[in-house]
Image (tube, rainbow over all chains, first blue to last red; front, side, top):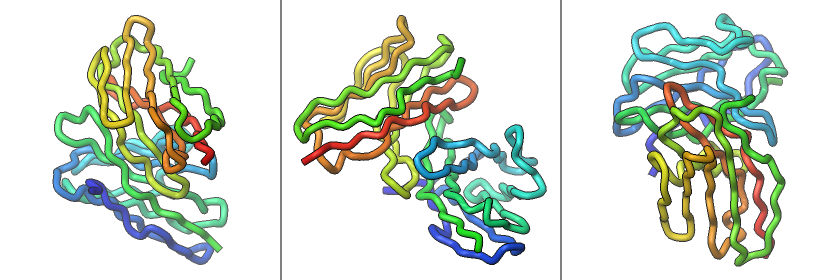
Length: 115
Length: 108
């Protein structure tokens, strides 16, 4: 069964509003979670690495103020897309490392459509 | 040079065929290797996980790592239409590195 859960799976929001996506590790504590963006038929693009209790590390070109990441507990990380615009419409996926941290488990993904 | 290279395909095979998916990596320090399957509009699902060199088998799937040539392979025996998906390879040292994914279609 799934070990990482993402919510919501689909969300539509109006341009200019903010939307929050949650990523939960279901039966383990995840000190590190990752957020990705994926456009249709393209590969995963790492956006940021989220460490519990500290600030997220963003990849080059990803706007920190646009994509707010909060990893407040060992089982929950959130991604907030602020002042969303149609070009932010995409598939957002989170993942978490488990145990010794040598492998990654992915969430089911969240489809964001900004209208 | 990317840390992990993967032929994006697409790859199309008839049902029942043996499928071979391959990746190369550049860093000899990588020790852990993974294969993920991603169906359309879903998050990637961990298929196989191997440590160092050797083979690992799980049902119709076999993962193979050749550290001497820095080559990672996934073999699918008796391929089924339900195997149609994008397959991602990954390797990890201090960070995780993913291939771009190979799109596979198994034709009934």
